[in-house]
Amino acid sequence: HKKIVIPSLSFFQDELKGEGVVKSRRTLGELAGIFENQDAYSQLPLDQLAYEVYSYLPEREGTPGGLYFGITQLYPGKVGDEYFMTKGHFHQQEDRSEYYWGLEGEGMLILMDRERNTWAERMMPGSLHYIPGGVAHRVANTGNSVLSFAACWPSDAGHNYEEIANKGFSARLVEVDGTPKLR
Ligand code: M6P
Ligand code: ZN
Image (cartoon, rainbow, N blue to C red; front, side, top):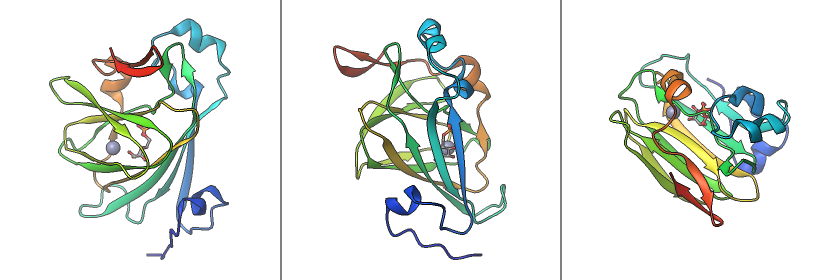
């Protein structure tokens, strides 16, 4: 394995100096169907960047016992009264858990268990969030600046986007009188 050094968040904001760090991006166009207000969504450019993920994946996908690391930078914005958010997923291997922690900006981590109970946790610099196995997870940027958070998850967790893409979460995080509320 190559050794990479992560001295600070700025490491990720610079060019990719870290060997083995993979950058991926999601545009609003790739988030089709996740927002409630289709009219508001259709007003926005499909190529607008919603978020970027810098991932360090030292093991082959599916390796038991390995850990992956990622930093997600989610841009501020809204579609109607709903905040820009990540696509959201369960893990392919249902029982695999994950840590998220806040680095920069303000947001909410939206969680939903197998019985489709949905709740949310406030994300801020330094906040730590344990996501147990069997719990779907998605992050919304509730602020006016970039929301950065780090993640650590097992290399055999995998992503299962299907249920969230088809049925969403059982509640939506919307802005009501200037504050985020689950509805
Ligand atoms: C975190 C991790 C990644 C995930 C990314 C974006 O960095 O959970 O595994 O890919 O967030 O979330 P999503 O895949 O739901 O778009
Ligand atoms: Zn995950």
